Length: 115
Image 1 (spheres, rainbow, N blue to C red):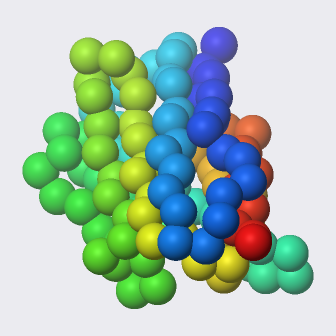
Image 2: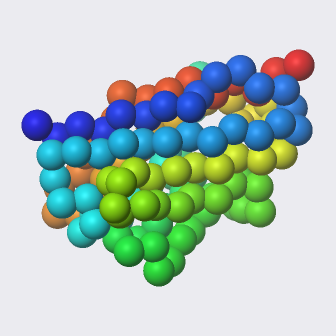
């Protein structure tokens, strides 16, 4: 079965850093673009960052550009989101998404930025 399992979320102070991981299985990971989405209370789910199948290109939401970095390790079937200079506005549930002809979603991991 297809699985995307996020980890690394938690509580962090403003200005702090956190790295999220998403471990994938059950599909050909290297052929899929990978994305991180997030959803804050009362808001729609939004695209945070994306990376092409072999990591040749990346894209970021303006709100996180310069602070977040998406990367992938196809040998480990894992995509990462390195988050630095975190702000309270980054508080959300973060979801991993695999995109090609089909879309797969993880269960989400909570990130809370608070002093």
